[in-house]
Length: 139
Length: 137
Image 1 (cartoon, helix red, strand yellow):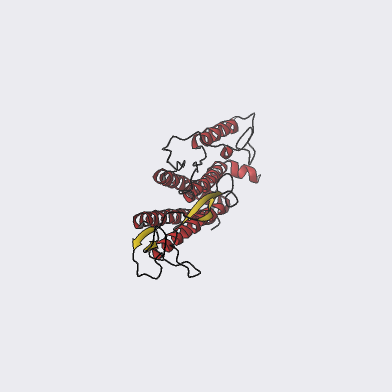
Image 2: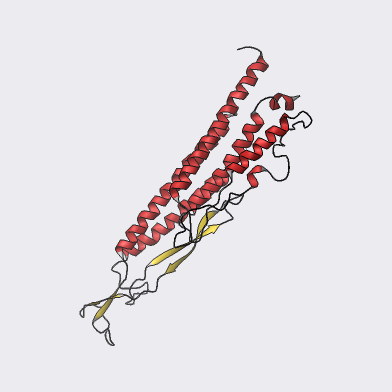
């Protein structure tokens, strides 16, 4: 009975990590610097889910975040020659590399993560009720 | 003596039903946790198979030549809940996953009701037994 709770919890945790990645993408939608302060467009993050047999039992499996990947997409080039991060020379001279984050995709994904989170919460409610009913035999 | 006390009721049957639905609940919880896992195929336990095996076990118990013993509901081989369901027919999404939330939730609710039904009836049986033991209403 208790594996069910662990499984749902693994789902909650995984969806929360996914939500973190999306928040990060949206928060950094205009970031043109990297951690070291060099001009570099932020690349969107995405999570990869994987079944986790160690959480469940009897063939039922939980879920875990296998990795957080960083996308490798061409940045959006905007012509802003006076911007401190503007490219000085080459074919993109005068252009600033902006992150290629699609807000529509991110919001849809965030909505999906929120719904999946709710679904797992619903399962936890049912699990708790089943456990309560079982314990009531003792009373 | 105590075995006879319980086997005269349906408590062992209800116990199997509760055990099965708890296991099935765990499996269905795994499906919902893996809603967004690419390549995940949903898992389930076969209700039909469980019920036919339970039926078979109850029939065996009724035969006087084959007295029932506690904890022996599945007469031969593995316990009823160890059997997996047949290949399900659902939509296969482009990430090679086939979990449908609505279907899983409705199965889970059905399973939940079956579990609570078994436990409610079991409670009633225990109450009846204790009334019988105490000898007064």
